[in-house]
Amino acid sequence: MNQFLNEIKQASTIAISGHERPDGDCVGSCLGLYNYITENYKEKKVSLFLDPIKESFSYIAHFDKVQEELEEEAKYDLVIVLDCGDIERLGKRSKLFYQGNRTVCIDHHITNTGFSDVCIIDAKASSTCEVLFEQLELEAISHNVAVALYTGIIHDTGVLKFSNTSKRTLQIVGELVEKGVDTAKIIDDSFFQKTYVQNQILGRALLESVLVLDGKCIYSEIKHKYFEFYEATSADLSGIIDQLRITKGVEVAILATEKEPGQYKVSMRSNGKVDVSVIASYFGGGGHIKASGCTMSGSIYDVINNLTLHIERQLNGET
Image 1: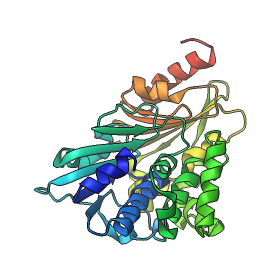
Image 2 (image 1 turned 45 degrees about the horizontal axis):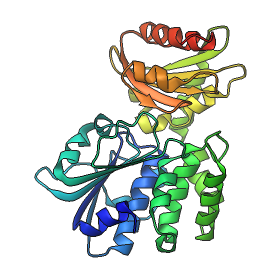
Image 3 (image 1 turned 90 degrees about the vertical axis):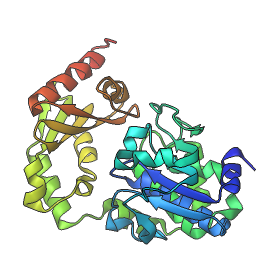
């Protein structure tokens, strides 16, 4: 038994969480682990805390067990954090980390700060779901667990087409398919399918996008007022940044979401020539070489001018 499973074995009460505004990999890894523990260690008391997750993930077993609010006075033998590079990324659930006697972090972000008692981090892995899979006993992975893990992998690999898709990633997907995963339905329901509101806000983001740096960078701003106008949430922005990234000739795509006047949540995607994790880290964020983010203050012009300065330096071969 590996160290991770030994930590689970020794704990009676366990809390699981992931980063704020959870994406597919975060949802898949958290629900995958929740299902794995509750199925194989029935005597354990397990709680799962996340921001509200999209209804499109409701096909994953125990979707309804996700709690948004913490149990303030609760103490846990073990707190497990997934797909999270630092404590701050837990958002309003960051205090949960201090409610655990022991802490474990499972992640694949190169910028992970190694903040837990036990850190299981593989920056070469396609996703946190891939890292988690390697910690679990294959024979104990049920269909329900496999569905969750497959979901996370396809979301962080762009349905297995991003360069982070390795031979091992495909081997793991093969193992999950052997568990009876309906791959086509999961891809359609959770990755490609969009609501009318999502299509509306995607269309607006594309119409208002701007090319800079001689067409090598594209950015779009999601103004705060759009959320009220479209009755949208941050979950409705899924896929916008990736659609911007595939614009012909573009090396870096930027999506700047206005959270409040003068404050933006920035997402960046690179096609390979620019390491956006370096830029995100400079502004207090983090992520991967090709996919990173941060929070920035100022006008949209301040934000874009500061980011493109660093992008241009890398495109010109400057350090």
